[in-house]
Each structure stands twice: as structure tokens, then as C-alpha cells.
View (cartoon, rainbow, N blue to C red):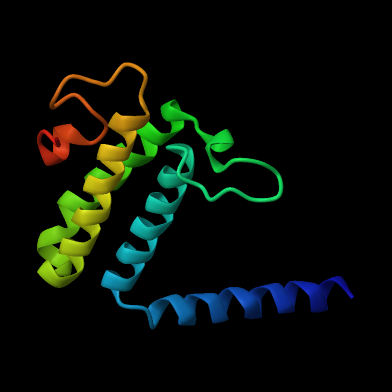
Length: 124
């Protein structure tokens, strides 16, 4: 019985490898960026209100800073490879998050010192 379970796991791994092999790099990069953006938006307090309470209860600016910085690094370093069409929308989303972070912060960072600004330059 264990042998069958091992075979099924191996088959699943092979299928996953085939599936990921069929995905273009731009799609993987864009998906990763969207996940970072979504998580950063929630951590900036931009989640929608729901039955459990206001969306800003998820605010965690320390976590948001990390996510935005990672996003900025991904977007700026991959932009030449993914093309302007994809990079433009990612840059716009990143800039919106950087501005939302600044607005949510009780003590905003100096211009050029905000999350990801070492990669993007000052955002105001």
C-alpha cells in the first residue's frame, strides 16, 4: 500500500513539473508580484470591511514594509525582461502601495526612505 502512495506522490510531482514547465516566465513573475501586492495591501490596512470588522484591523506596517520592498525589487529587476506592458501595471500598483503605506504610517518615512524606494527612487 505504501508503494502505491509513493507512486501517486511521484506522479503528482511529475505532473506539477510538467504544469510549471508550460507557464511562461512573465506569468510566474506577474503572479508572484500580484501575491505580494495583495498581501501588502492587506498589511497596509486596505482590506475590505467584512462581518468580522473593519479591514484595517489587519494593518501591520512592519510586515507591509517587507512585502513592498520585496515587490519593488521584483518589479524593478524584472521590468526589462517582462516588457513595458506588464511592467507598467506592476509599477503603478507598487507606487499606489508605497503611497498607501506613507498615508497609513503615523510617522511617515523621509522622502526616498520609504519601503522599496531604494529600488524605485522617491515616491510622493
